[in-house]
Image 1: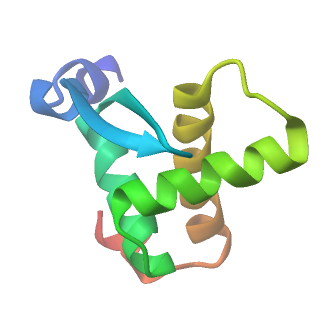
Image 2: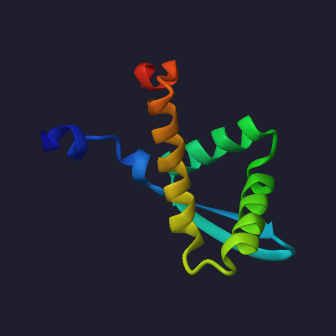
Length: 97
């Protein structure tokens, strides 16, 4: 069982840091490349650049919850929610992966 997980391409979980502005503040966000691929896809689907999508998400989180303690964890969970939504809608992209 673990061979599927342990044997995956290390590039999938290699960290990538991207610099961007969130609400006027310069920051950097470090995620694994697999998560960046999903964030990029979400941004495109929503009609944003990736920094624009992340900035919009950050603004909405501030409006709903106030400051988030771990925004990168929120981004990872956003990716998981996206995948869960695709699975529940029987999206053909899930079967192709």
